[in-house]
Length: 412
Image (tube, rainbow, N blue to C red; front, side, top):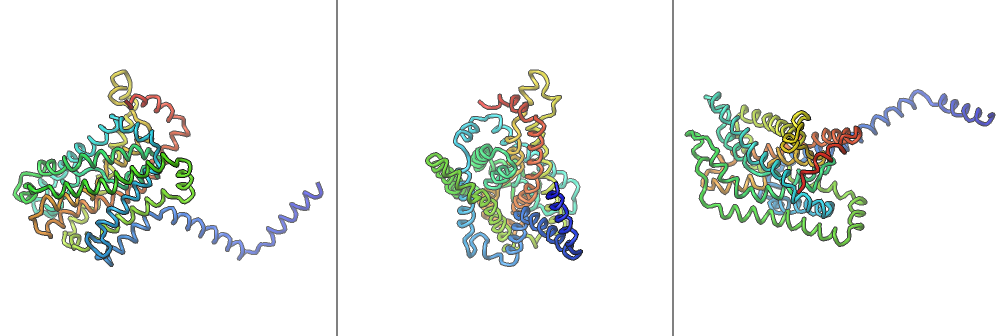
């Protein structure tokens, strides 16, 4: 007892001996440590900000056809690394299971190719009717029609889904399906949805020569997505335990996030190099920036609601079949795949369809594609935290097991 008292007294004396400046210094160090940890947790946003700054200061470095030939080094190299890592990370049985998941395919592809164009087309016609002075540039509105018709993005969906704790195998499969369908659907769908007014006549008639566009798109899809995915899966099948150990030891999944920063860099470099951002009116730029955020958040809410319909809609045998909920992990994949769009098809398609159009007009038309695909990464970064929290909340409350028992019929 005496020894314990002496220890307590010694500890008290030590605490009393700490001076006021030392206590203040300790508090400062703790604050700085917390601040540093917070900044490190937001390294994607910080990296994207630095990438945008470098793109503005040195646009010729990473623009399409620039010093580092980003159309090859980044659009092939960085994207290929993302899919190689995905192939190394995803178990084979999960890929096979999701290839047969018809409910997931229907949900993601209908949202991407039907619902999003319907929403954007309604907004475009509303602006045409309420903006007789044409303060919003028609090229911007035409660009949004193109945005709505292109498929979901190749890289960021998989990375964000994995970061949020979702089913990255589901995201992988939907990305591949969408980008195989995209070249066949997007061109005709874009021309069909263009408004029948005089100011949209230059975009109403697309180029008849689309052969080079199809060749380039499928070459990029094969070399940057399919081939690395197959190689990654082959390595995982052969050395599964060793592969898993290396992925964890060297934090390989973080490399995918770094590759996304490179994609933002090359996207903005091309925009600044053509001066297309500076060419737009202030109203057009403000509308584009804020509409992108609103559209992405709205589409995310729709994806979540369709993936997890309210309980009252799931009552009865008919309701259970039609409004069936999917698992939380698949819901996260849908929330990232449904609203997202890709520059990998959007920009080549735009330049191939309107090859006879002047570069100035094509650059203005490409602004919605460039800004939406960049802003979606910013917004999705914060959605990662929200969806991760939601999934953790479900697990803690025990609702996940109930949902999985209901959603079991979603797989064939």
